Image 1 (cartoon, rainbow, N blue to C red):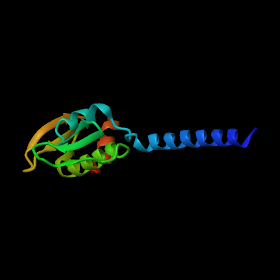
Image 2 (cartoon, rainbow, N blue to C red; image 1 turned 180 degrees about the horizontal axis):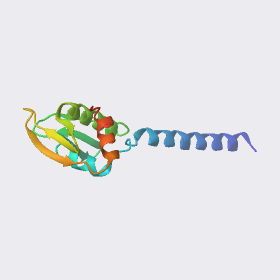
Image 3 (cartoon, rainbow, N blue to C red; image 1 turned 120 degrees about the vertical axis):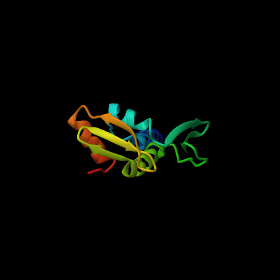
Image 4 (cartoon, rainbow, N blue to C red; image 1 turned 135 degrees about the vertical axis):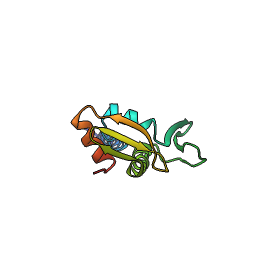
Length: 126
């Protein structure tokens, strides 16, 4: 095998390895989809597509973030976790979502024990 062929193969493998590693880092952490989708309705943060990727906006504000595409989902999770610590609590088998002035705005029924465990660990609620 010629040196140029070996170099081509090595660069190709390096390219695929780096691409795979970047893909793994950009993936969202696993979530309980049913309960997460219900909670997302009340979260003040949302994604907006733009030409260069995504922007994270805050409802009712001009605040927006433009994280790199590989970090957008992890940054959205960080923002949601911070919001959830202040506005989400668990009472028996319900997730309680509160407004800024601590008034209850929604109750979401927890159907599975795994959903309750996920809410507690994701939003760090006791």
